[in-house]
Length: 137
Image 1 (tube, rainbow, N blue to C red):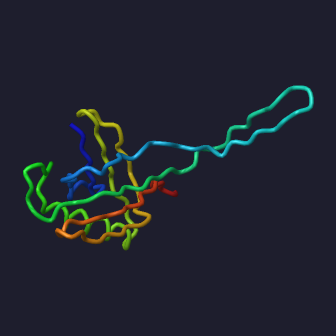
Image 2 (image 1 turned 60 degrees about the vertical axis):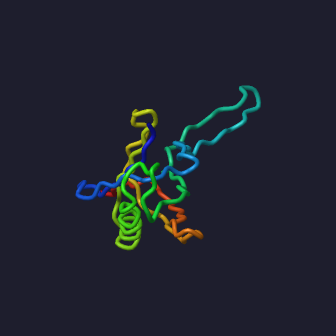
Image 3 (image 1 turned 90 degrees about the horizontal axis):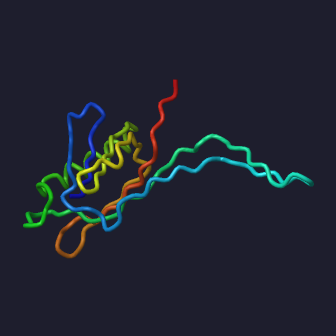
């Protein structure tokens, strides 16, 4: 069974998404590598540091009970509230994704952007931009 969860870092709020987005986020890290061509020895690759990564999560969340909900529709308002607070107050959230009951992502993320609206039947259409959170010391 596939699932998406978000939480505060202290796990006082742990919320399961009632509906999954059509596309689960992909995990990709891109480095700042450089290639140099030489006259006699071919091309050399100088590997740089790995950049922060991020992804966009787009989908729908219910505003009423459906038989196929993965969790309570009441999580919808709590998810929206958490994402808005994280963006406005600049704190990190934990994003957990599982596929076939196997955890594939468990990451600390910053909310880079969040937008939502409603469809004809009142369900929430959302887009959240999540970026890797790094602590600077």
